[in-house]
Amino acid sequence: MTLTVLLRELPAMTVSFISLIIPFGALALGALVRDETITLAAVGGALLVASGIAVAQLPIKPRVRA
Image (cartoon, rainbow, N blue to C red; front, side, top):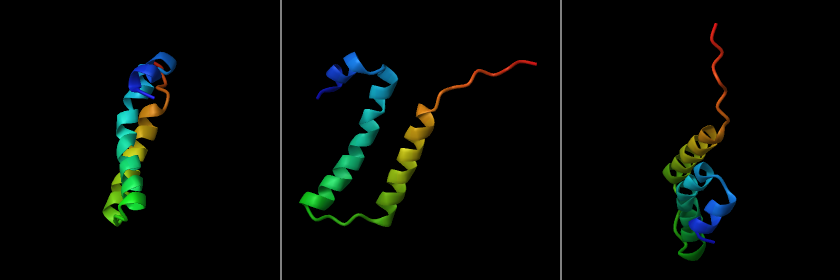
């Protein structure tokens, strides 16, 4: 499925985060196919990226003016 097809079905903001998820697949695929070692630094970096994606997906609440 290409990003163009996804853009028809999902909001552009959501599709823009898909490019940030690709390294997770590469990390897992490297470990499974090429028997690469997943280091603590790689896991920590993945957690930071996942946290950033989660925070960016939160709905924005309008500020109430007093």
